[in-house]
Image 1 (tube, rainbow, N blue to C red):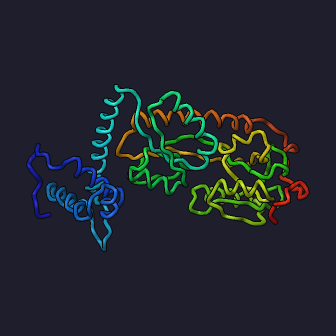
Image 2 (image 1 turned 180 degrees about the vertical axis):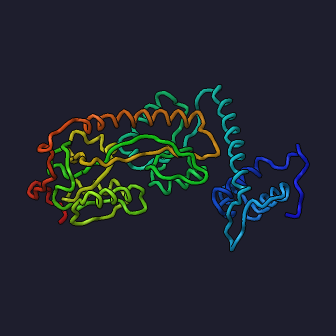
Image 3 (image 1 turned 60 degrees about the vertical axis):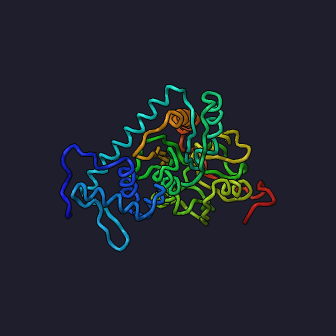
Length: 339
């Protein structure tokens, strides 16, 4: 670089510089960083150039419209994150003296919204009446993008490696279950999928993080499949199952409202069990507000409470000869069943 580093003690960057640098680093794009920070692409370039000239180093390599962080940027990013998190923590500490209030923006997958969300919202209304919760339901890819951009305070998604700008930590482990029409199989029985008849199964598409895990389970356990249908709508898949001989595989936590077995037959997949690990993701550059932390504590408590029902069911010992496979009885299905 042409410029020399400034003399020690000079304040060369503002919080705006830091935020724009962090956005560019996490997005790997000046254009995306500009959209995220409500700036212009030229403005982002100017802020980055200012930092590079002030420090006498290159923070990004630029090639054909793409940018990649340098080792200097990696080191600077870690320190910038600490600054932004300390600032956010300071704001939260002060706001706590005024009581818990504010808006919370949360991203949840259908696994969390169908059974866990309602009791969580009821508790928030009763315990923290000045907290307003905004929920976005989507699959993990969309939720992850919204967390990185700061549109969501946090999201709960299937476990994955993570990426730049994300703080990832364990949330809960649940189990996958086989869901069928209520007249197909014994409700809450255990089933070895490899021993049953070929399944007509509805699964999410490859854009869903769970699909890769389910495919691995099916292949490694030689589960017979008659036909596979992809549907990226959990409620649509359950509606199809409720009126046909199709089955689906969904997390146990989602089926707490169907323990009575009136609408679906839910079977516990065993030998081996198929688990689903859920993680909490947050923007790395900020800490949760008191309102967001309050809602997180509540929804985590409710999820674990509901999940304990399934933990007890899966932990019960059942002799091998008592483990049934799903048996299809066509005469028991409604006239609207698909073939």
